[in-house]
Amino acid sequence: MTLPTEDTRVSYPVGETVSAGVVMHLAPMDDGRTAVLLDRTAAHPIDTAWPDQPGDRGRMRWTGGEAAFVDTVTGGIHDGELFLGAELPVRGGTEGWVFVVGHVLEAGPVPAVGDEVEVEVDAAHRHALSAGHTACHLASLALDAALAEAWTKEVRGDALGNPDFEGTASQSSRIEPFGADDSYRVGKSARRAGFSPAALDDPDAVAARANALLEAWVASGAAVRIERDGEAISDRRTWVCALPEGEARIPCGGTHLTSLAELAVITVALATAEVPGGLELRMRTTAVPRG
Figure 1 (cartoon, one colour):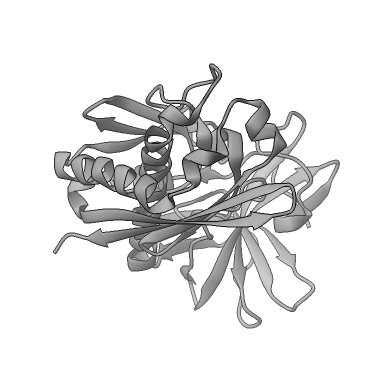
Figure 2 (figure 1 turned 30 degrees about the vertical axis):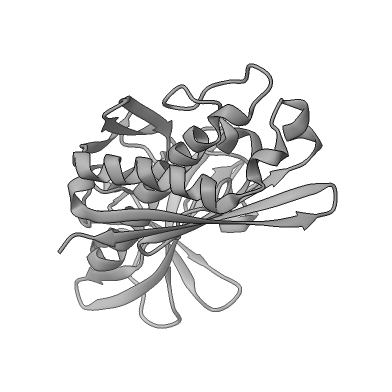
């Protein structure tokens, strides 16, 4: 079965949840499911390199049939071989690769190669994840600001110019509906960079400073947008938010709200734990939709 020779075109960065596309390839999976590759889609796939936001789910319809897709994954094609999800060994945009979106259908009816299909994303689930992702970016910026005095050396700045604790110590990030769960490691590398772990002796005080910023940012109703270099899944995309302190810009392949006015509140809760070689900081972010 012929594999695509061009990247999948995606429209989720502009907020679309419905799209029409042509089936380019069907990839049977080991568990009996099938990944359907289209020439274009509105569905957001989980990124293998930084799997923070889960893939979209929804329904796929074609003449004579329809089926639910339960996940959406990133894939890559190289030397005539398709690598899906966790099998993908390279980052998006790697030269010599074609990058695709796989819509995972459970065992059952599937369209045929060449069929025109409609993709309809679960819009409510997308919106909840978008709120969680927007809140996650804001929470990281607020945490950086709340820890800005904890550095003894000059370090690179974040999107607002504060010392980049997020970029220095981040270990994992998981976007959830209307929230996120992030972990940070404060070990030798963070200390060498100039971060003082004593700044986390009172995580509630740090959270209070971050939450005061988040309250002001949400109250501003700042506009949010995604800028992109092109429509291909491998093209660079950037999250942009017009905060009172200035325009924040963060490279991001996920989905987002269009305005902070869509939220009533964002809060973070922080907790620390001793781990071998240092300290772990966990940040739980919660976003409450307006209305």
